[in-house]
Image (cartoon, rainbow, N blue to C red; front, side, top):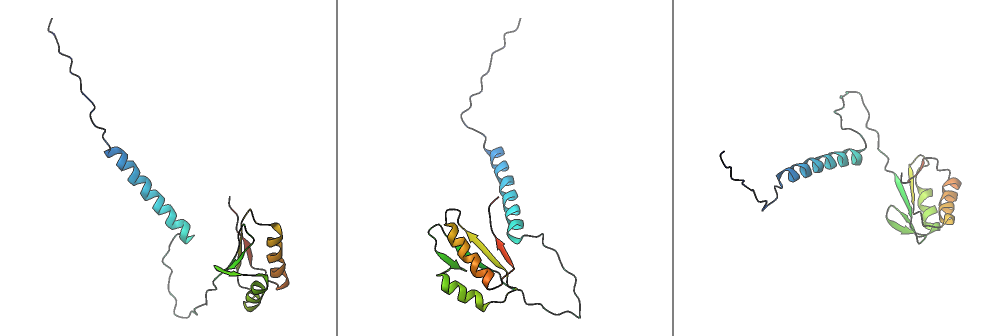
Length: 130
């Protein structure tokens, strides 16, 4: 009977190439998804027309209420009076986005909503987290 010598292979190092491949695929997926989330739509190439008018795109106004009850309109700190003055200067069809911290007082939220209702702003979005 022939004798076979058992050979043992030592693991001195770990093969990281499959790990790097998986991480690159995940990175591509995250970057692709983030691009679609940021744009909100899939990019398309629109057809052209000769008789068209360029419509002015209205930028949305964002109102922030932080946990301390401080008000910001487009990243500029304001009080209730200044907020009402700035909102009275914009069109009633202008989109207003309200982002209120969950730790802020409900009264701060109600005060902003009261100003918007009094000024008859109806294009209002309240941002929440799923």
